[in-house]
Image 1 (tube, rainbow, N blue to C red):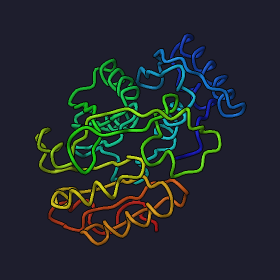
Image 2: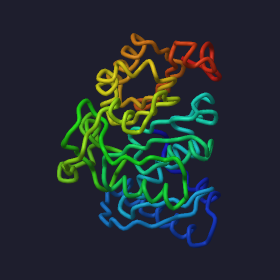
Image 3: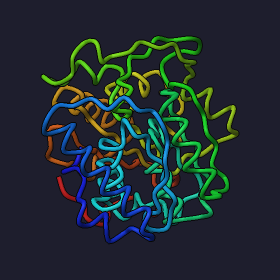
Image 4: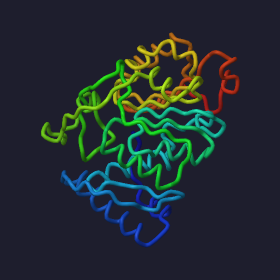
Length: 290
């Protein structure tokens, strides 16, 4: 995760007076939640015109969602290396799409790119669907499932007010403010990465973006036969253990780490070592820094 919301920058993205009022409301709620520990349970969705898009937020979770929006649209989370911008790619898989900010950013970079956006949390998925449809984005396949190691029903833990955290990551990181009563258990549909690709008629994946709250390596291990068909992978790790697991597994399975964010939670950028699959990114790539 990055530094969070920059409201001065956000106001520069606002396109109308009503949206400015809503950004001001989000800032007030941001202070209440993160400074005073308040819980805002209102689940109503509202829209804000930011940059090129109409962005939908949920009242109770907007203070967290605006952080993620800022991290992706201002700080370029998941897109720090030019070769991972999606500008020249045909197929991108967004696993852990949350409310769709990465999907929107890839579409802004390349309107012709086909994106499969996968999000199991029904509250986040509702906002994701509205963000895609209200902006008339084409060639975006929305999947309200969890990508995991097997198909079928599965239990998912969520925090309704904070759609960006869930599953293993809830308890993996220390959060004194996160009381047990705020964590809700829901049942969602699960699928595997190979099954998802089959259903979406995908042979070659240009970019696989993974932010699935600590289950990245499990999913990759269960999809070994598919790795040869993936050009680039950007993985958000959630601590030293998950970072090391991802580096070890992918380095042992045909990928090279080309960039690593030196943060407690940050992104790892990998390219497939097969030059026939990804000649444009083979060798030293732009901004490579380890």
